[in-house]
Length: 373
Ligand SMILES: Cc1cc2nc3c(=O)[nH]c(=O)nc-3n(C[C@H](O)[C@H](O)[C@H](O)COP(=O)(O)OP(=O)(O)OC[C@H]3O[C@@H](n4cnc5c(N)ncnc54)[C@H](O)[C@@H]3O)c2cc1C
Image 1 (tube, rainbow, N blue to C red):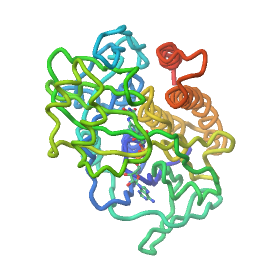
Image 2 (cartoon, rainbow, N blue to C red):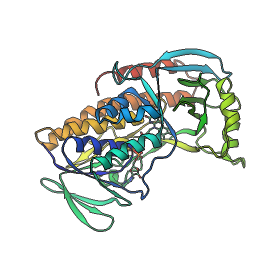
Image 3 (cartoon, rainbow, N blue to C red):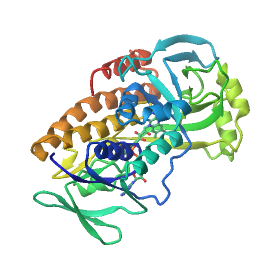
């Protein structure tokens, strides 16, 4: 094998899936996570089939499905509630997997963290890599505490705010998309059993995804700055959702301050014109590609990065050549996702332009991902 001893930096979805996949392939894996508390936030997430394929590959999917909600379609609705069309979501993970699954992020994280511990992966919380030096056949890593250790490979999965990225000399940084998003975990009725997106309302768009037998997460895309109107979170979401009806009437009426909710401006990042690695340090996941969640492919691309990297670095051969081939393959795949997501964001922001075909672009972008990763 090209490497044996690996350091994974970051314990989000990318880092945990990468650590599990590499450990299962026989590598000696250590994971460092900057946060001293390592449990996922309770927001909902829409996970497409290609992410489910990665979860199945590492044996996590069967543990996730019982708590989640799998479904096949996407409803397009008018803000007044009426159904415009139902689209069958392309099966990006293959014909034998659901096209989409809604879940609580914390439920996915719990499964992944449990697996990390069961596999005996060494985990160090509350620390980080502060420096590294590429050696002829490895990497010398310095940690926050001042200690140093040698590894064959460092996989940096430290997210959109990656501190490893500038350490590699990559000058790309995250940028605003011009959009903001409110999300809330809310009760759902049994008929809200697939994702729905509502157009032509007072905000850019709103929608929901079922995440369990009785919960969904609802969202509204709006301006990137929260207005200074003195409203608490629940009242602000209700104000923004006031123009959305049908299933949104019951979602809105049931929101309380006790619900899990948050607002954030949406940012993006795409390292497209230079390598993702220097020597034996490689960036994966949101650290090199983060796109607005308009086709719900962010985490799926992260999972594909993670499982494919485990496959490449356990091949025989020259590690530089393997990493180059891996990065080229991932860049080609990710480029289409970022381009489609940014086009959709542009159409939300500038709806008066000609040729807008949101449903068509979403379908095409997901259909393209039915090809192997
Ligand atoms: C509003 C919103 C909604 C989204 N919805 C969806 C969706 O529905 N479906 C979907 O597929 N994708 C979605 N995404 C995208 C998805 O959430 C991300 O692509 C994915 O979570 C990124 O995972 P990551 O592990 O690469 O990064 P992160 O989740 O950011 O994890 C990075 C980890 O590294 C740790 N860390 C940071 N710096 C260091 C350091 N120096 N040393 C050690 N550890 C460090 C952090 O604490 C963190 O735990 C959404 C994104 C946003 C913003």
